[in-house]
Image (cartoon, rainbow, N blue to C red; front, side):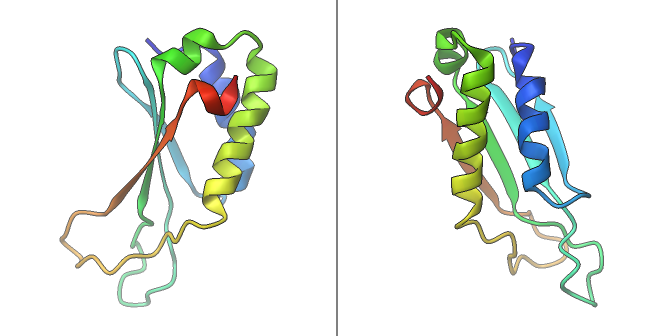
Length: 112
């Protein structure tokens, strides 16, 4: 089950992404999974081409170990900010292909 503070963390990282980014919390029994993508707008032949999908997985252990959700949220934002600094959202997947997914694991070490 996703902890309630995950929604607060989403609002902390939302400004790091383009305005039209979609951030969804995926179903999960244990870990919290965020799925993030947006329109790239860089290919006139494919005006609706979306970015690589970022799948952020916050481990159950990290959520259970969280003693201060505000401090952990700021650390979470920093983790996402650092990963975004080297992330290339573009891809060469054909129009009817499967969009690549990049997984980012957030552990208890990262946020506690």
